Image 1: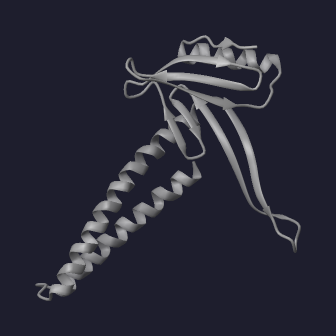
Image 2 (image 1 turned 135 degrees about the vertical axis):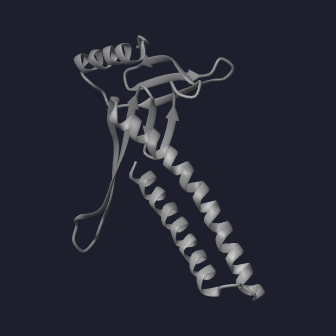
Length: 176
């Protein structure tokens, strides 16, 4: 989710910077007479518009990602990636990849799989010894996503199964 947050900030900054440059060109330039200045202003305005479009899209993704992360049924830290420096033998860049599963969808780092929104419904949940399969989609198009998970004790799996049943209305099936 941090990557989505960063992209949202970058697009907002580009949009604001472009609009600031355009405002300065309009205010200082007065009646813009030079063709180069007019072309630069048009380019800045177009770039700001494109950046604003990407910013709006990222805001929507951030909103859905927050909704999923704040209402987890299942939260798994899938991997920890770090770079170890030769000089210090200490991890430098530590990156955690996390998976959140909620009633609203799945958040896997920057990938968002929405369900129970926009006509996409969760249809089935299958739990295996080291994986979970989610089947979701509309009446016309169905998709399945298989996610690997670490082994959990039976009591924790029963609790997760009960939470799926309570929050989504779908009773997970167990695959041996």
